[in-house]
Length: 305
Ligand SMILES: Nc1nc2c(ncn2[C@@H]2O[C@H](COP(=O)(O)OP(=O)(O)OP(=O)(O)O)[C@@H](O)[C@H]2O)c(=O)[nH]1
Ligand SMILES: [Mg+2]
Image 1: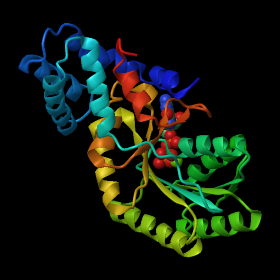
Image 2 (image 1 turned 60 degrees about the vertical axis):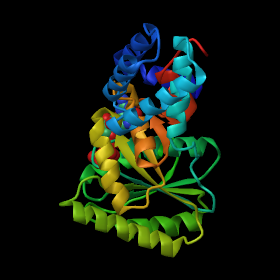
Image 3 (image 1 turned 90 degrees about the vertical axis):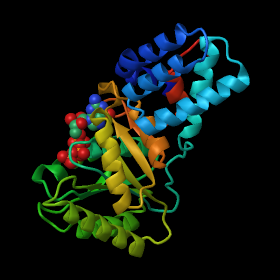
């Protein structure tokens, strides 16, 4: 299944809840007037695109509608799709150049970090790469066990220490082991919950320093994992983490379980950090590279495609 079909399936709940409303508004329109624009803007806010993005998209739609003399709902949808796609960050694949490359995975507890790491490891292993997982979530006893299960399932190596160990030491050892074994990619699992936010941010900064020192030339991704079902709260988390770490991308998980799929647009367009991966289920192959054009087309299907 390609991205489009899978994302369409993953977005089913969103589509049922929101796309229909947007389509209703557009299907009944006679001309692009203030009433229509207002209803569309409201539908976009309901779709969790965020008030800022909805207002900007509506203003642009109004301008283009005037310029292009739009007469059919199909055209209107097409233009709105263009606008929303254009507002999102460009699709950029993960940079895993350099050997070993590093993917640092961060985010609050329960968002799907460990699951995403398992899926990503499985993908790289299936491409013939050697993958090292680093169990730097030492806060919770079961965290390393969970990662170990994923390592086995994916066919990846793992470095783990005991509960309460220094996450920096785990990262240091994982880098050394990855170099010694000729691994292509190191994927680091981190704690989502510490005694307080400052501890969490200090720990991330420390891991960052170790990576910069030990692997100055490797490609590095710092991926923030966000749970799509939390809606606008995910946007808030992204803003917080974006201040503390140099995020290179967002992973949006649990798109399959939410009607708030429009949050992808709010994050990509509003925050300026590209959504790089999306999770659409709990299985090994339920992680996909993000494609903004397909995403918007799935969200706003219409008669022009
Ligand atoms: N439906 C669905 N469930 C997901 C997805 N990604 C993760 N999950 C589920 O979300 C739950 C939490 O996932 P974890 O990977 O343990 O989350 P975490 O961020 O590592 O959590 P902590 O280690 O507690 O910080 C699990 O039950 C996963 O199966 C997804 O894309 N879709
Ligand atoms: Mg975890």
